[in-house]
Length: 143
Image 1 (cartoon, rainbow, N blue to C red):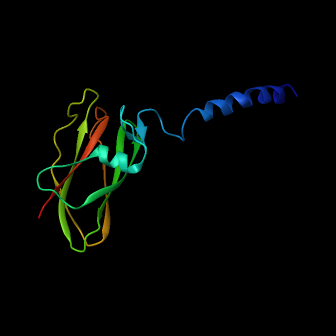
Image 2: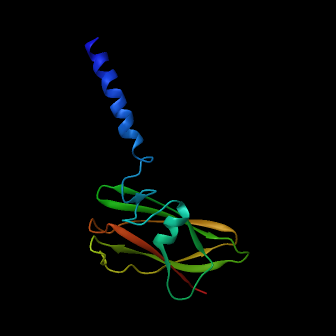
């Protein structure tokens, strides 16, 4: 009887604490990915924040991005989409950023891929060290 009274008293406090957070996201994170102080309300916002183009532009677009922590490392899966009716060759790499906004590791080499017409490709990676707290996906046309 004594325990049921304690549970009944703590239950409203527990529900109130859960109601203050939106979903399971931590502050400074969206879809598991670090976003800092940026406002991200959708997957499109996250993809725009984390993806950049270098060199020759490509019609290939990142459409989704998901992140998770594996120990102190960040694991990333990004979906690349080719909605054109031709095969496209692109290259991609991830740039790793530390807490001060500087590069957390040596620049990765470009990874060439070929996307067939109207197709998707998931590319993934894991941060090279625990100094990397943020990243950018960089795309470049190979045509």
